[in-house]
Image (cartoon, rainbow, N blue to C red; front, side, top):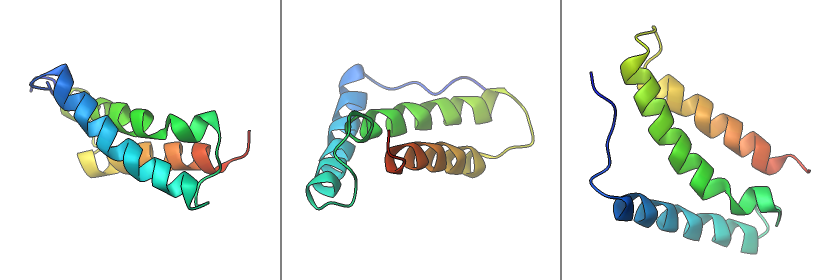
Length: 84
């Protein structure tokens, strides 16, 4: 299997922007603490998702994509909710 490829960097940027809107609303609503880590959450989640998809496809370990994605999301949210 080949690695996951985006049609363009614009598609990735659009995805990050869409997730950033959700994160910024969460910060405004007090659901996330206003920290640099929280502001990077959208980028980290999107980049982690691409990494998890590539790892799942290429490492040939007995870990499916859903498990890889769960690990990415759990790690990033734990990091965002933990005070610096």
